[in-house]
Length: 168
Image 1: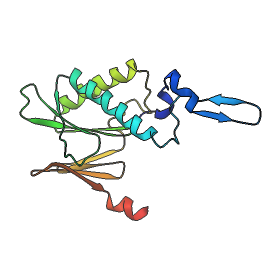
Image 2: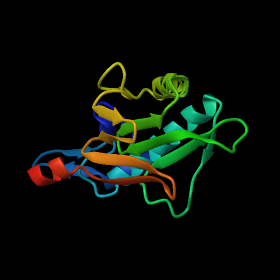
Image 3: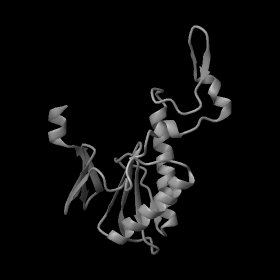
Image 4: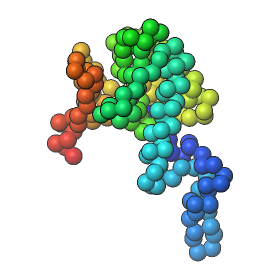
């Protein structure tokens, strides 16, 4: 979970005039991505996917994306031979989930993601952003109120957690 994510994304100088706040006596220009702007989640999601892709490639894996993939922000990663799926990385705005049965794969991606985030000056809320808030089992996992299940026919399916949905 990235710390105050939108406020860590700086706006290019030429766009800052579009984000002004005027009070009675002063005019302020935002220098960071505003949290309430309708495009901010899309921009944040795109940046997160790019950061994850960089971390996966640095870890020595190849990335496979499917055009008709129903899971938003999912990157499938494969080994050097590119024929066997090793796992999935999913970005949900400023939250990241790595789903793999290989502990070493997860460790390599986590280590490289931390390096990429550090290079980009993006802070995380906890020391290990990948492992917080995840419950897992042999057939899938639950993350931020979503359940992910691996299926033979389509790879990965997701749905809202029924308990959380009932509470909402």
